[in-house]
Structure formats: C-alpha cells, structure tokens
Image 1 (tube, helix red, strand yellow):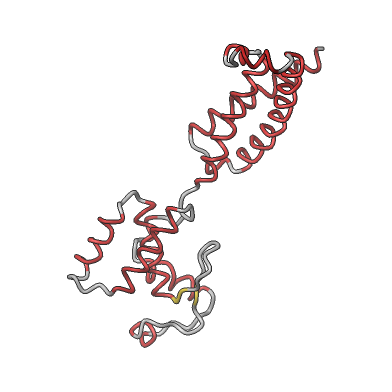
Image 2: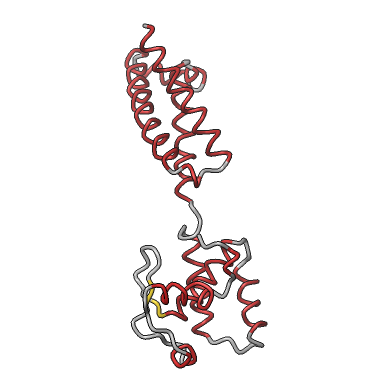
Length: 204
C-alpha cells in the first residue's frame, strides 16, 4: 500500500512522478486537459484500464476505505471539497476504488482466511489426537458406525490436518510482513503442535 505521507492527491503526488520516472512526457497542457497520452493504469486483477486522472480518483477511493473512512463520509467529503460540483464520473471512480478495496485489493483478507482455516484445522487435530471428540459425538452414531471404523476415519482426518497445517504455516510465515498479532499466535500454536507431533513420531 502507498505510504500515507505521499498525500492523498494520488494523481499529482504519486502517478505523475511514476510517469516521469518512466520518461512519459508531462506538460502543463496535458495536465490542464486532464489527459496524458500513453499513460494508463491497471490495478490488481481488475479488468479496467484507467487514464492518469481517473486512476488517481480510483486510488483515492481505495485509500479512504484503507484508512477506515466510510463510503458515505468519503463521498460527502468529495462533494464538499468540490463545492457540490464533483462530476458523476469522479463519484463513480471513487466508488469503484472503495468497492475494490473491500474485495481485498488494499487489505489483505487472504491472511485472515489462512489464519482462520489454520485455527480450525488445529482444533480438529487436537480433538482427534486427544480423543476429545468422543464427548461431542452423539451415542447413536456409535450404534450405526463401528468404533474402530470411526477411529480410522478420524485418523485419516488427523493426518490430512497435519498436511494442511504444514502447508498453511509455511505460506503464512512466508508472508510474515502482512501478519498481525493474532496470525502470529495461531501460527505459533500450530507450529508447536507440529513439532510435538514430529517428536512423538521419533520417540515411538
């Protein structure tokens, strides 16, 4: 994500310097006309290409969501800033930026999902390893399924859980810069569980 000290006018404070660094000609005339030839931007996997000024408006919308500002306040802020004359196209671009940021372009929801699934798998593995699931399964299940067969099913689930835990821990730690405290805690507990399992294997 952009450093906030660069300012929130992304067209002039970020995009124009990027273009200049790539030897794109920036003149007072094309800035005044709000169109810089051969200067287009695409964000993430969005199937839309924006010119410089539209891209700046898009980024502003995404930035307001990233900073925690509600969409309503952001839209009202643009109207006030432009004395009510903000164009419908600009408003649309702000909205697109806000919408994309919700879907994860500016915030890392993937890490949250990985941590959630890691925690879920860890709990399941703990239930199986210490056979705590016996207290959770209704008695009628044991009348339908042979206890040994049930244990075999849970053993398969346990070893699959070990595999998925290992994969998730590796992918989470590999992206450690995006980890938050809760992610560290979950990954740490999972890592301890995996280490204890390895030690158990070697001591059998």
